[in-house]
Image (cartoon, rainbow, N blue to C red; front, side):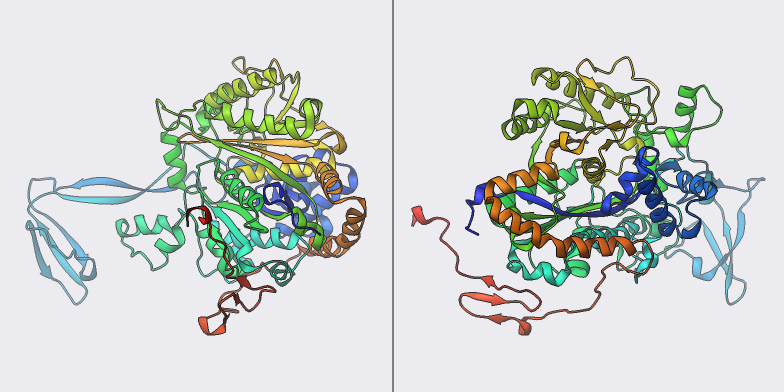
Length: 623
């Protein structure tokens, strides 16, 4: 094949995987959990079987209604299971003093004596282990306590699935445990082994772009770093390193893919996934990279994070949900209600990854075609009244990607062959502002009844990977022809603009051939707006045939058999527990002496091609 003009390279999606509250992402398993009641019998049965194996249930009973009810109840958004929301650990301030204005006395273990003993304390040794403290002044203390959380809903991985049990996790934070599983799932979904992927291009033409919006915040990471000294424990040597927001990408490089290529962790609050997709898009279009792994991981279902967002007024509290329903019991399943009467968003954990190739490499290697990335627009809000408040930047991102869709698909293609996966957080502010943006731009682009989905009603808001959750639903709809409806609502709120929108409450059937493109919209705190345009497999294949010609395309289709067969073989056993995630700790570690270096190239063991040192002068016109 001839070398392409670098700016015309198309990033083809050749793999997608991960895990969220709907299950395993690869091969549309998590998507099918969302639309399970609309699936034909064979796909519904296969989805329940996948979930049964993943959740540690008897696969032979996955057809029984009692087990299916259990699987439905213990996936998607539901009552929090990762900790007891009725018994959240708390410490209460106490002011201890005697009842008769005399000195207060108490016994203390010697090892618990503070380094700096208060001047009001008189310390007497009782025995080898204890001392008697007599204080002439009241003593301030922190007393262990428990409180009930005002928020009891979250999107959590399917009950019974423990990513830490699948490899030697060594007390990794949960977000990184999910990363190892999810990135392995995505890479294996390509149908290529790691060695085969590394043989396809130079080491420096591979990149990993990743990150988490908040970093890792549980007890094994930043949570332990900041809290341990306050609760009588010591921070560990891992807390700082494993808490870093870019650590999911670092784990993929160091333990899963073994890449020595470019790496970056680009963070944009809830738009983080699309920020990293944009970096991959730009690098592939420029010709700098040929294989890009993009993904995010977030595990925010911890009490401190939930309490933090609750005090902002951002989360759907139980009392507010019960008030909406006029009920004395909370409906956890319907905690997230996009574009309806609602009370706030619902936190969720997720890790979603995609593998991109430039179209020339995809054609040469016979890669799978799941779709393509056409455009990602990122714009800030300008001056703002408040950091979390929405602004005008999202008008720009949506309009720019719609313009790109019009240029690629034509006026009729934009109007009749695209749909939008909205950010759809379930907050009162989002329902107003996002509907205004989408409705106004649909009107301006001549779209009368633009289909809009909002899958956070199923899986919750996972922050950094949220766009990946949305993309997984798009990829599934392109294969099965079912767009998930906004199933947790029974009406559209009066303040939602919808004259030119279709906000369905039930699943919508559309022919995959009629869906040529789809948009993902993301809005993040601080004015981090991003909108992505993705092209369907059918549209992508049509463009590949148009570019490379019928003969080359026919040869490409024949080459795909290897990747498709290997990918399906993986899918057939992925949930069985017989395939551990890819995790190479201390394996194939290289040092400088392993490299073969010459003035023109560096050979790196494990890669099929060398790093080229024949660099062009980027400032030739200045020298």
